[in-house]
Amino acid sequence: MRVLLTGARGFIGRHVLALLQSDPRVREIHAVRSPAGDSAPGARTTWHAVDLTADGAARALIEAARPTHVVHTAWVTAHNDYWESADNLRWLAASCDLVQAFQTAGGERFVQIGTAAEYDWSCGYMVEGVTPEKPSTLYGVTKKSFHDTLQTAAAKFGFSAATGRVFFGYGPYENQARIIPYACRQIALGKPADFSSGKAWRDFLYIEDLAAAAIALLFSSLQGAVNLTSGDPVQLARIVTLLGEIGGRPDLIRLGARPDRAGDPPMVVGDAIRIRSTGWAPAHDLTSALADTYAWWSQLEASPS
Image 1 (cartoon, rainbow, N blue to C red):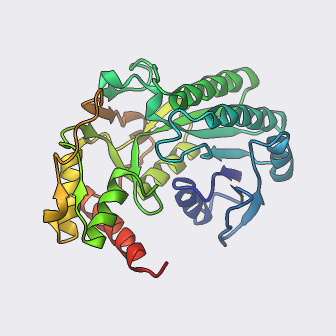
Image 2 (spheres, rainbow, N blue to C red):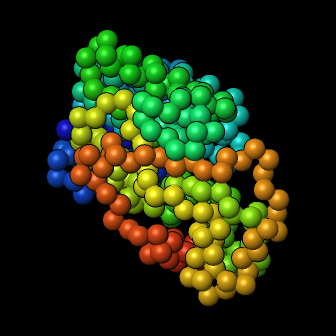
């Protein structure tokens, strides 16, 4: 098995890479980073500094790596900007180029990292093949468009393909503007952390468990959409309250200091039956995973800049 991993220095990709490097089933790894990014050492790993959105880049990469399997994690993910960024269109085109080159080279299995934003969030509980796919953002629309293209191409050209739909991953290297890193950093700095009411229910999954789910999907025969999710809803208020307790400063958590966002869905949770059919299950409970996450962020804040 020769695995090509895009976005290998991103939030999800770097954790997937660590698991691939320790997996004896993988003979050869080709890891892709942006030209401006850094590489990391690892067993059986060849690094490629590539801008996948450049003309001809995907084809040249596939010709160089000749992968049997692809895990495609790269996409635009800058916090707040990515939902409606025009860069989503560039990544849709680049991803289609990657699939075309992969098919031409005779690849066997292509797993892309999708998003819960491909669903209609007004439904609350998302089940593959049941919940309507009605994204409300350009990010969700382009991800779903690529999912549809990937599945159609796989059926037509005879390779295997799946989309791992991620809900709310958290842990080391997450974008620091998101809710859990924000809470961790504020607590570590001894500053108040202001939140809305926190009444919304979400489906959080620790990044190491999320990466393991992606690997389980890669080695499975599952095709189509597969939720990479805990299936265990938790209120945002509980998440940040636990972090305050873990950091020893529950007084810094100020629920209700900000208004609830208009139109914010009360629940976004994924059904986990398909991914659990592979034998995968989360290895971390919520409290210990949040403790590890807080320790990482607090250490980062304590380090000299």
